Amino acid sequence: MSLTEQAYRRLREDLLTCRLVPGEKINIKDISDGLGFSLGAVREALSRLTSEGFVTLDDARGFRATPISIGDLTDLVAVRSDIEGQCLRRAIARGGLDWESAIVSAAHRLSKTPTRDPADSARLNEDYADAHGAFHHALVAACDSPWLLRMRGWLYAQSERYRYLTVPLSNSERDLVHEHADILAATLERDADRAVALLGDHLMATARLLIDGQDSARPEAGLRILKNRAA
Image (cartoon, rainbow, N blue to C red; front, side, top):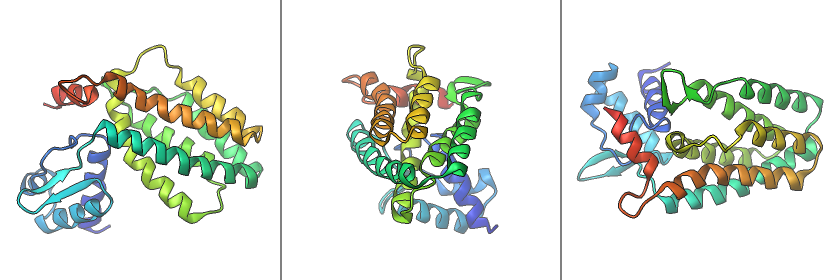
């Protein structure tokens, strides 16, 4: 793996998990020194991440982690629900026994993985993030449209930044295991309308944590908490 690819993967992970806080200026030299990559490798990685929407470029100020907003989140969830819903419908229409088995296996792994980081309960457990991504990927894996799957994958990655910010705002009233189980059951029953509706509700419930947590002075409560813990 080239140094540029290594730098890209590390920076992308830091952006998705909000270790690089949305809106924060990215100091290329600090990253180069801290991670041990050359300045050129870091610049190339950041240019690639800019094309993917995770980083913005200001000619006068350099690179910055793409800011977040409630408006962007609302639009993102609506578009992701549409695209992922289409993928799920096509998967339900075409998936076979192997597809069903993969979904059941992914759902079982997800249900057995703790949501919060054992070392810091205010942060998402990265093993859970991997299991969650595997479950949602398994649901749509039988979709026969490569373009829909590509768009769905990009939208999922963009959504991850927001989901990491919801962890400090989560409450005990939400039953994620039950939400995923309901989506699984409707999918295995080949009830496309119900599965897609449940998926949309599931995505919106996550977004609602940030939308309801905002206040007039500071628009993203999850981001405020994250910044307070970042040191």
